[in-house]
Image 1 (spheres, one colour):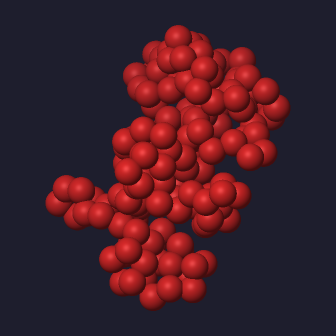
Image 2 (cartoon, one colour):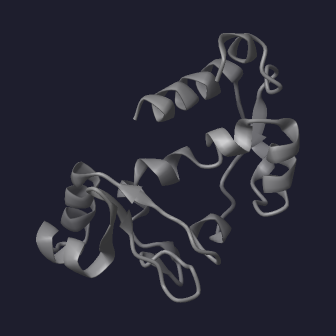
Amino acid sequence: MSAASASSPWYKSGVQFSCQSGCTRCCGGEPGYVWVTELEIAQIAAFMKLPPDEFERLHVREVYRGQKSLRERKNGDCVLLGDGGCGVYPVRPQQCRDYPFWPEVLKSWAAWEKEKQRCPGIGVGEKHEAPKLIELLKRQADA
């Protein structure tokens, strides 16, 4: 994000978003990657009461040069998604915590509106102010 766009982004007045109870649309239905770090793997494994190496063998795949992603089911759902939602919600990966505040979703009002068609939490609930969003985007870019 350039300094000019960061100083006056389209979302300068903030945006509304709150996860909707029972919604799992961001957790699957199409192929993708849920990137995980070694720390996240360890935290999720501990939450699931599994040794980290076993959790990794069962639920993680190496994608490219050490980058790791959670596996998905044949239908595109995250392997950790269950009937009640995310099976590891309290320790879900940072990528999941950041949604929908991803660079590709916040790049324009049109991209935000397009994602709104998929996510019923966009446009309702808690207001997220621009400084917080800019900081999230910066952290993601630095990761």
